[in-house]
Length: 195
Image 1 (cartoon, rainbow, N blue to C red):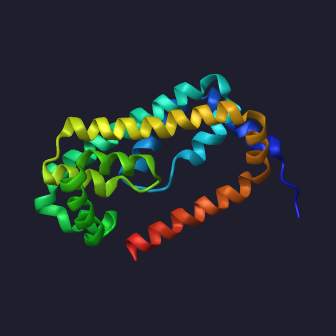
Image 2 (cartoon, rainbow, N blue to C red; image 1 turned 120 degrees about the vertical axis):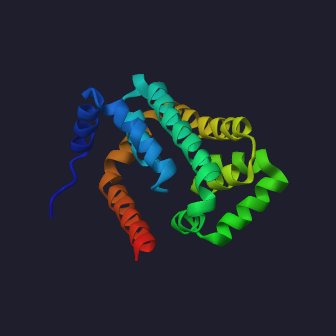
């Protein structure tokens, strides 16, 4: 059995940080997390922020920009495509029950409902479609998503700032196990969606 090398994860993160594609890739991954794959991007943000403390605010900002861009696209998908492809979109992103429930929640509590979904690890896809399809204000939608996701990403940067080396040591010790669990979650989600 091979021993886990904590420096391997650090080397990978250093290489990522030096790459000119790192931030554009993060932007695209943040968009994908918001639009397609409901696996929290924190799995990438936490170790990257821990190992590259000088860039943690930039990393949070790029993740937020990707998230807001995707949220805007998802909203307009809800506005423009729900009539024609609504059943397909709804089943792909969580089912009719989740969509109906969130549509009612938007009508009753609009801003607070979107704000709550944006802070929790709950997938944002159903909220985007429902907000667009119900005609909820685009600017209020973006404001709620912006506030909630800023809280997550900049809050994470603050947490990393204060947790520092202890958090990095935990990540280095368990990064393989965390990676394996995330891979299983992605495979499980893909299987459930496309079976």
